[in-house]
Image (spheres, helix red, strand yellow):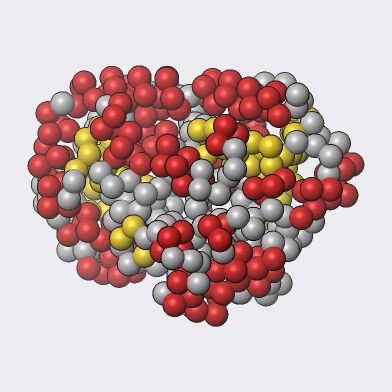
Length: 375
C-alpha cells in the first residue's frame, strides 16, 4: 500500500515520545513493503516565523494544507497523527483516500490535552463545556492562548473535522477509547493499537541492575515532584529528561548523591540506561495514553513501578510486569516488593512485550485497519 503519514512535530527542545513513535511506525511500515511518505511540519521552523505563540488558526481547524502534495503522491491511505497547531484539517476531505486518525492525547476535548488540572483529573470541558478551560487558563497558563483551543473543543469536540473525515480511529488505551466514544458516532470504528518498541538483545556486561530509571518530562503532571519527596536514600535513581521543573529540582536535590539528573536520553545511551536498571519508575499523575517508554521498558524485560492512577499502573495491575502504588507515601514499600519479586516480574514484562507491544503485533493490527477502510 501507498501510505501518507501526516504529522506536526513537536519542538526539538521538548522531545516527545509521540514524534519517535510516528517515525518508528513509518520505518516499520516501509520494512513490511509499504511505500510511505511523511508530510510534516517542524514546530521549530514555525517558532522562528513567530507563528507559534498563540495558535488562533486552530479555532477553526485552519493551518498548512498538504492537499496538492498528497494528491501527487496518490496514497491508498492517509494516516493522520498530530495536526495541532500547524496543520489544517479541512483539506483532508478533498483528497480521495481513506483517512485513519491516531489520537495520542485528549486534545479534541481538552485545551492542554491531558484531561488534568492542578494535579488532578479534570473532565470539566466534557461535562460543563469547553469555556471552563478559559477560566482556568488551561493552555500555557494563559486565558488568551486558551481561547482558540476552547473554541475548537466545544461540544465535546464534535466540531472537529477529523471525526467526520476519518474512516477509522486509533486510540492507545481502553481509557482513551471510552473518552473518544463520547464524540465518535460509530464506536466500531475505534481501534486500540498501543505503541510498540523494538526488542534489543542486551550484552551480558550491561546487565548489572544497580539503579532505578526515570525517563520523561520534568513537569508537574509527571509526578516527579511527589516521587522525589519520598525517594529512599539507599536507592539510586537515574533521571533522564528536561522540562519546566529541571532547574528547581536540580537545586533542591543537589545534596542527594543517589539522585542523578542526566539530561536527555539519546538513542546510543538508551540501551545502557534500560539494560542496567532495576526497573523503570513511572509516577505520572495524569492518565496518559500509551507512553512509548512503557513499551521500551517491557522490550528490555524491565518491570515498571507505576502510579496506579495512570494507564501504566492499570497495565501492570491487569497483566503483570510491575507493581502499582496507590499513593506516593506507599511507593517505598512497593519498591521493596518489586525487588523481592524481580525475577518473576521480568518474565511478565517480556510476556507483555511479546503479546501486546511488539512490532509484529502493531503491524498486524494496523494493516487490518488499513484493509478494512479500503473496502
